Length: 124
Image (cartoon, rainbow, N blue to C red; front, side, top):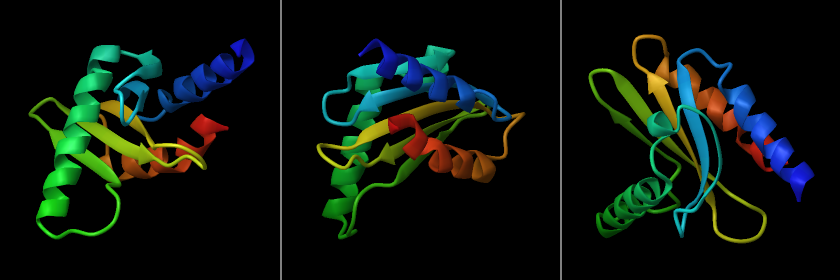
């Protein structure tokens, strides 16, 4: 178990090398339990709040007639962005990769792509 935690922590730490990424966390999308985090945990957001936000948005999209699973959510303020990215698992409910981004130092499209490309690595 310790080796798995170390690998997870190492992959989250690597995400901090991306320009503008200030904090990341891997969160259970159903319970809100945070499995691991790196960087500024306040920037990544609280696991339970991220879970509730993703659930609320998915429910509202479904009620509006949208089909398919929620992929990502980007919340923007004057100083930062918060990204929630769904990470599907082969078995079980998906996880959320939550990331805090410094608005002055990040290209949101590039950050989304980087986080998406490394999402599978986080579970490896």
